[in-house]
Image 1: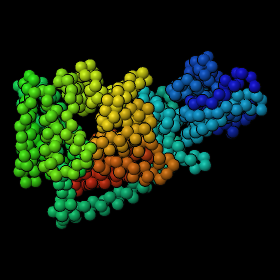
Image 2 (image 1 turned 60 degrees about the vertical axis):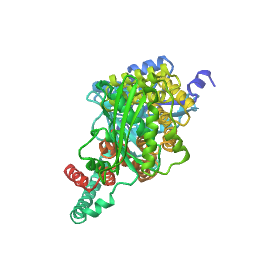
Image 3 (image 1 turned 90 degrees about the vertical axis):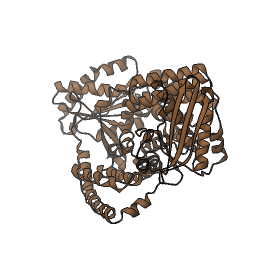
Image 4 (image 1 turned 180 degrees about the horizontal axis):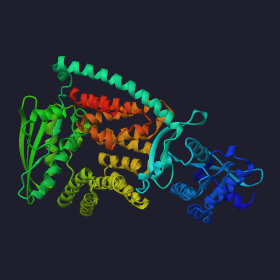
Length: 590
């Protein structure tokens, strides 16, 4: 076999653009020849085609009524080529094409003429995706769309359609690529049929939900006290409210915030406690007047209030644990420490709370609460400043806040290279920026991985490091199995870590098990992880169902099914009062 053929057909991951001439079989033989020649000219004029061919990174496969172009350059190449071809078709109104794109393995073969040819999943799925469209459509597999959405320029052009059944009963998830200059924005005919079926299902669900509304309203009127008793807060539950900054320098707010967060982090390791997340308590005042109402909204029986005063190297921490149901103090204490000894205060407070709530502690949990990590005082101060800026960045999405957080974490590590928590949080901050602001380069992601590895070398059982590693696998490389392993390890070490549960639920959604099994399996996996995450993050339904949502388009579910899940979650996490507005919203959408 010639050497050049061997080179062409080597087994690789190919980025496939499958092109089909719509209505080809209805043309006369002369018109078929003319259409193929016209298509060849358009394709060869494409800049992406010429660039890949010049680099010997393109394989061209004729298919009779079209062609398959296999790029060995980047996942963007076939999408860019399809855009260029679609724009060029405006000058060829008689030529109607549809295109499908997928990246996957392709294996080489030699046909009867001893020419290089291809076969394999990459080629087959690209054709199946194309078969879901009509004239003018550029359809992408979900896999390709996920690769492209890492780049900001592609995101406005990607429009999810859901899943489509193709040959042999296989279902493929499809994304439509278009804007006003190329592609076809119209819904493909195969999806129109599916949408009509979903509309019928939504009407049926609306009727069922309205009936549920009547039941809920009846329960509200006639059984209010009984419902409230059923939703009573657990005995061993606590919310740590924001600590008040009593320092003369208001800029020391970061320090009070850091002390609160460190106590919260320690308590989160106790499996026997229900600990409300920092995000859920952040909106409350340090010492609210309506403490009982706050406790009811958060679903807890006890509240920890605190105040911090920092003057030079001296720190005073005042804390009080309150039984919100009876509005009585369980204990109160003041701690005067040097800055370098403040970590001991966080340990003592955490142990006092666990003892007051009669929490059952395992040996490892007792050790986690009692251990006092020794850090350079200035490094610890930089770390707390970084934590403060990171929380600000997560709330605002401001790139400048992420930059400030990164700078403080790096200063902490410069002072104390063995500061594992600072390394883990630096990695998490970088990954948040990668996901929410702008993608990191491959080199930058590798730097993040080395930072995480350093943290785990210093502290193999550090929950924050395992959480960061899970995000590296999830957001950095879409390695879902690795992400699930790390999020699960985080929860073993820190059972009340709501973020780990939330991210694990998101991974279950993204793994795509619904493609091969009933969609309920995917939902139930997510429910198992998300339900407890919501119990520790009450009032954050918008966060759960918007920022990290189980969107109906991603799951190819009827819109009503998403509302049913939202309704169930809302009822679990708050009370019947929130059900009626959702039902009203659902009925208006019809």
